[in-house]
Length: 63
Image (cartoon, rainbow, N blue to C red; front, side, top):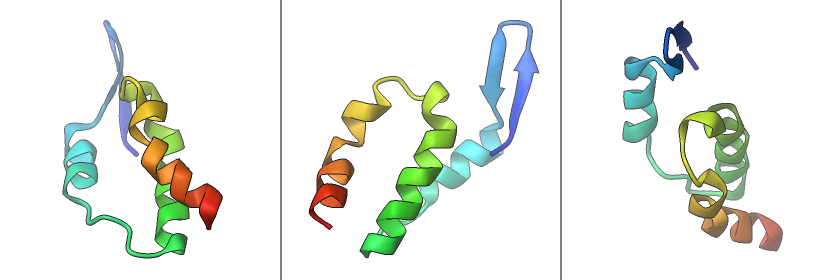
């Protein structure tokens, strides 16, 4: 993911954020695991990410 430094802190490249917003939802366990790994790299940019990802984490525990 593209990140860059600004005087007010680190920000995510808007074009990269758009790609995340437009991505299709995972359809199987492999894709869900991949999404969980990708979320770790953007966690500093999204508030309450752990709470937002709890439904995914619940499915991963079942899988």
